[in-house]
Image (tube, rainbow, N blue to C red; front, side, top):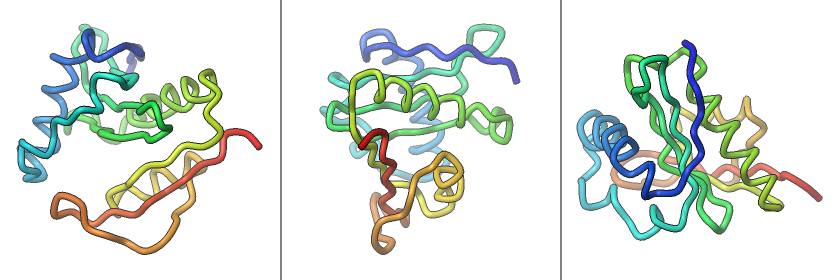
Length: 142
């Protein structure tokens, strides 16, 4: 799948990122809608994967403290490498901003995806929004 990655602030990403996150987290995974939206959207960098027709098919965010989160890919785009492109863009932005390390809470089924990108699991699984997760970290610089 051919996509362009747009890195932007919440004002530009809001409509498209919310639609993807609602479809994936709220509708598919049953995350309560009140848990999906938080105060971290506004100060974060957001990546949007845009298909050839300009529609957004994936998103993720980079928080000011070096956390990666809200990684979501629409069902129709899964398995195409789009998620890896979004993650790569967020990692590049973090490196550009001088972050020494990235941290994320991966759903356990997605941990191998993040491991392929160089993240390492830290500690045991825990539950977040009713879904098993593991903390994962990746060092960007010494």
